[in-house]
Image 1 (cartoon, rainbow, N blue to C red):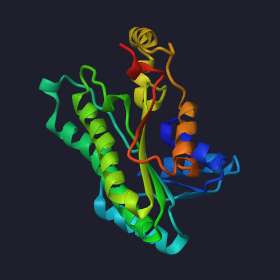
Image 2 (cartoon, rainbow, N blue to C red; image 1 turned 45 degrees about the vertical axis):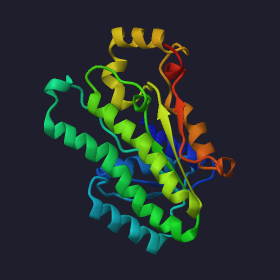
Image 3 (cartoon, rainbow, N blue to C red; image 1 turned 135 degrees about the horizontal axis):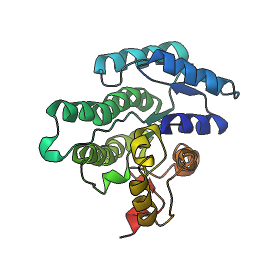
Image 4 (tube, one colour; image 1 turned 90 degrees about the vertical axis):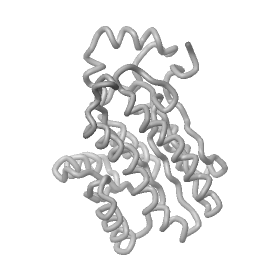
Length: 236
C-alpha cells in the first residue's frame, strides 16, 4: 500500500469524502473500488499533475460541477538513484516536475477556490530528505527541501485567507517507492540501527498526523513540516 492510498483511507474513516487522482485510469479505478468497498465515499479525478493546463481544467471543472475541495493532499512523487556526477539531466527534470511542479500547480489551483471561500487545508508530503541527504539521491533531496520551503511560502501567502498549509515528512516507510531498499538486507539492517524506533515505518502510521493537520485542532498550525520518522532526524 502506498502513502496516498493509506491517507485516503484514513481520511475517509475520519469522515471525509475523498477524491483520488492518478494518470493511470485503470489503477485509479481499482483503488477507488477498493476504497468504496470499505464504505468510503469516493470520486476519481484523472489528470497529469505535471501538466499545468490539465490540472487547472480538471480541478476547476470539479469545483464547478461537484462542489468544493476543502482538503488537499499533495502526494505525487518519484525517485531516481544515481551518483550526482552521473545523474541524467532528463531524470533531474522529471523529478522536479513530478515532485515540485505538481505541488505548485495543484496547490495554486485549489488554493484559488479556497481563498474565495476563506478556508481550506493543504498538506504536502515532504520527506526526511527535506532535512537529510544520502548518496545517490541528491536531486530527490533537492525536491523535498523545496517542498518544505514551498509549504512555508504557501502559509506565508495564504494564511491570511484562512488556509492552513503544512507538510508531513515521512521517514523510511515500507512502500512501493522503497521496494528495492526494503528488499536489501544490508540497507534494512543499517536502517534499523540508524532509526531509534529500530524498524521501517508502516504507512498507516502517517494517518494520525494527516488527520490532525486536516482538522480544526490544527487551526493555528501553519507552515510546519511534521516529521513522522521513528526519530531518525533527532538522532546521530
